[in-house]
Image (cartoon, rainbow, N blue to C red):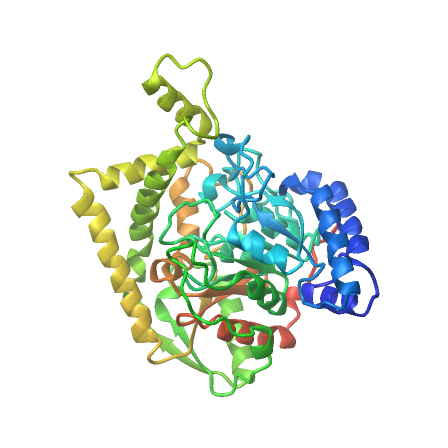
Length: 483
């Protein structure tokens, strides 16, 4: 049962081959058996899962149907879940039980999805390896000595190890696509505003976006269908109709114009990954796509711009965690200043502290124009590059990451090296574009992903291309040994 995709589970439940309760029990037992070596979960919600599974079975018995009705999933531990710990991977929120459900959680629960638990993540979503979590690093099921990517590393590791068919993640600079690439999954970052951020604990508000992680594009389409839509509670949510993503999967790629930016194939890219990317291009050409070289001239400025904007927004967002209202509070503070300093110093880990300090510096009176304002101007130039490119092509294709997964601890003393792993993914967040990573092969036994980018609200086009590619390749079907 654990090998079934979301789509196969939906068919199995509809045909009464098994019940949601049976499936849920199998997966909970599998998590209990295998997760100690992966550390992909922070909290398990067995009682809630069984309760939701029984309710889903009752709804099906009454004639209801739906792709997510009775399907088991997990949520990245920054989506608020009523009465359940929502930790954000941080000591700061280790004792926080959210008083309400995030919109994404509520929408998926209403569709009948069964929540098995909350997955491990980099603290406050800050990291590319899942190593900054207060609860310890999640491990990559393809090799337990390697990182699964971040910040949605727990979701990726759990799905890749077949502990469950799909999970939610969030993507601020690649945090869905990068772990998807490093664990052989399909991961989708929707257009900014497509999925509600209400109840999703913020890292960088103008960049964060929730999305699905699953084994196939078909499963991502099913999960995104349940997550997407306008939310009046979120001021950044966009009132745009949500198409039927599954219905568009089988469209022909004949004549589809795919742009390959020359800037992607620079010295920083592992040449073996470059070969796999070009092999995927050849595969898409066989399906009728037309390939064109394009240019994104301002891509070289993306990392410095991102690492000014994101920490600036983080320093502002995380100022609310001060030991006064909720979250961690230091013991026996001498006065208010001591309460603030020690609660934040003891509650936040080193990576979060580093980014708060960088952000506060960039926003300070003497440096706002020199750093933050300039970074926002570069952001506009990057967006303009994409708009010009999409006048010529329908999709942009390239690597998701410059390297395969690295060993746990290998980049702990060099944060800039870890930041450079985001070079291909952060531009989509700066421009607000949808992006998808799909499995494209292996280097030294470790998975590699190919990234697709599309114009605003063209998630369906990304899913269509990925699905057609997956109908003609088998990378996405490979399972890590032992799982």
